[in-house]
Length: 329
Image 1 (cartoon, one colour):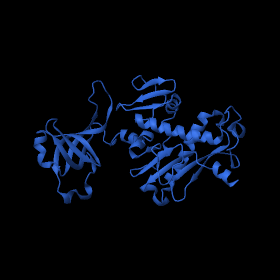
Image 2 (spheres, one colour; image 1 turned 30 degrees about the vertical axis):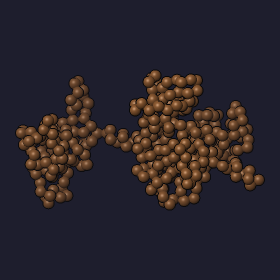
Image 3 (cartoon, helix red, strand yellow; image 1 turned 90 degrees about the horizontal axis):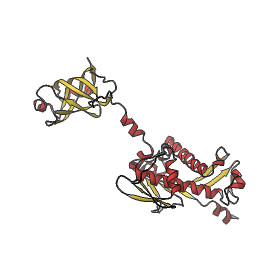
Image 4 (cartoon, one colour; image 1 turned 180 degrees about the vertical axis):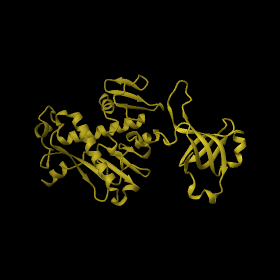
């Protein structure tokens, strides 16, 4: 009986977090809650894609978290009351629909496998492409069971039609919470077979810090917003910062202000006339320009251009705490 239970509880897949942010089981509680919720929501999404009759049913994803870590083994599905649904088919235990001879463990394994495949394709293209129609250069049918996908770097992978469809029909933010714990020194591995604590197999799909933006674009969206919206068109301002560069060819300056480099147009005399003010703290008298230079465009520039009237060099002691303040005239 014990052997039977151990066989039943053998993982059907593993989500393996490893790195500095999860060492010794010391983790950020809010991020951990989001991550575990991400596992549940993502796997249930793929479970119900395979068997639509499970949507709304009273079941849960059963996992086992290894002591002192966030290595999460997926065990299977659990019906209401905490009863494991292994030996009987999903037809008998959960949905009463045509799932043939698949057990709930098979369904859970398939969900982990689909997740792994979607991660693989999304990393290949560098983005989630919900409902995307691919051209022949991007997706070439090899035969009725294989499709060759080519990305912008001309790298190729082979997937099945079902795997490509799973990728196309996954909402772009569906994996957002799943990658919550991924950071500069922490990676997530996904595999549809158990991952041991001493060996991460080549078959596991990794999501590292550079891959995270594929599944969570909030950092990119933040960068797409207007910088310094308080600096409006034709506003007359006095700003304190640093002139970080001068380009004589384009006759422009780089002005470091509040953590960003803004394009600045020098006063009469051009870049050559302000060389003595480069690479040190300054106060500039300027007008703000946010108009796009594109013909016929009424768009507002995301970063303002500063048309400088005059520049006053500041010594380090006078800049002090007042560095990079905004003064509207």
